[in-house]
Image (cartoon, rainbow, N blue to C red; front, top):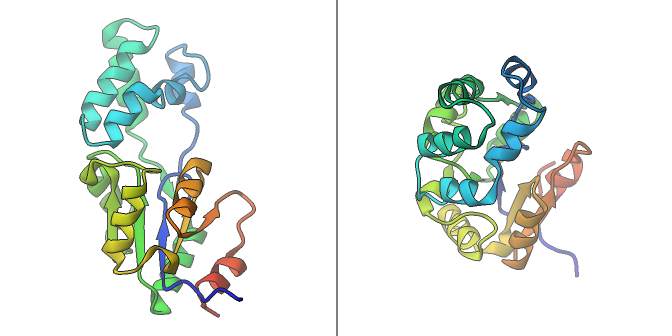
Length: 202
């Protein structure tokens, strides 16, 4: 039996709609090993509380700085300089989001985020590009928890089987599928034709 097209889209922010350049210039300036800032930031014991709404983004940055092999003030300066870059929008993905909304499908942003998300969306010019914004920091629940997906679908007014979810993280994609959603693993091999068909948009 052929599956009916999805009625709504949920899309991830980081790694899909927002891209980041590696912080090589900052790491080189402060004599840090390439990739150390990101690896430190993504350490689960400090990353999870930051996206689960337990600590602020500023608290997270302080914890990152404390783990760098630098004097305290120098580490704080390195992290502050790294944070001045807020990423950039993938214009091809944004055009797709706008196309899907124009076709009458609601689109939600579903992201593990910190309390900086509203300001980042405004700075990136994305504040008006979604029907709903589902932030783990606001929900106090992060992907891939089943309740995150249930709440995200409810915010769109759709049952999970009628929602297409796009993310670049395997765990999030598996979590969405376990929640009954149609989920697409985002990579550099982007297939907009498949995604349009999955949403019934020609």
